[in-house]
Image (cartoon, rainbow, N blue to C red; front, side, top):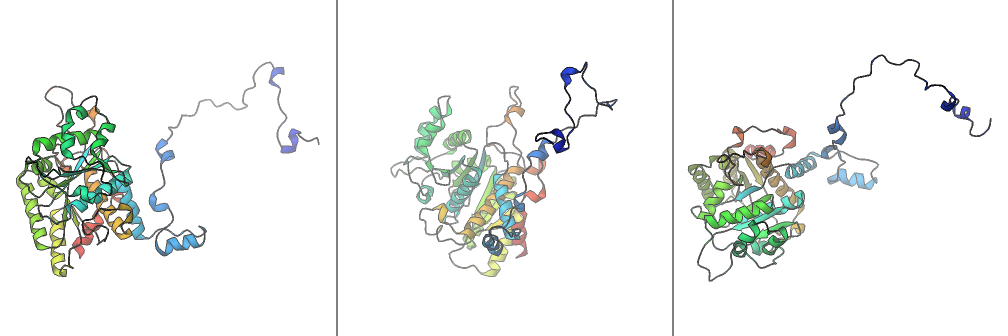
Length: 399
């Protein structure tokens, strides 16, 4: 048998169609063509769940590395929860959203909470997150930022409002007024001029909020300590989600509870009931009974309670280097950001192409107060397994 002979591979002899009078037909042609089947593109593009990846933490991760990947243990419960928390942080939330971090008591870790949430959201969602120091007088957010340049503040931004809001405005122009951090979070500093006597009121706050909603998808606001100021009131009526930072000191807890009552009195009871409470470490170890009562109270009044551990990188008021925080601290803040993202996703946002166009029926400006999530119809319900926010709340109630 010659090399290259068709019979060598068990194939049939070739047919020369040029010597045949007509094109051959199949011996058994079907009488009816089969019905075409729809291609399930979703199943083809579906990515495996994050829980399917091998373990990287603890003894499971060490075993995998020691065997060069030959043995691939599944991740443990703690690692799975962290992976799901990262997924929750990255989930679709729709529109430009405003997160209000508020507690009237100074020293309640408002600035730390706002800054850390901004870092986590920017790092995991790929930027487009701004942390805004909306203190009506003088705030300290800029002092906690790792990058302190440029030296511009909210007053400089207000001076450029007409240009930035118009057709000539650009993201490049906007960058002159914000301090970009290594996590890709942007910092908008409060006014720092000692000789300035005027304060940022509700009108000025509204203009800044409009600018930020045009250029950023997510705004984390560090509020002042006066709930009766125009800036605070604007935030309370426009916020999509409230974050309540507290410690277990009695005065911090009492003012936080009073703030929740205040929100209910001004028509934002929904903001209080869907709030995320973040318990920061106290200066001294709290009494176990006091801590238990605090957990029970805020678990009943707000949607989720998350505790974050002590981290020397966050203590003392020095600039925060996000890459240097401890692993325990990072995991806790990712869980807190996941709880906030879940609350944002639960508040349905109308797409611009779905908005009414007839005069007088247009949608309120971006960031306006919305109905509570339980009265809205969501077109994209998410499965319960996609959320991790119930776990901290249950843990808080159980302790």
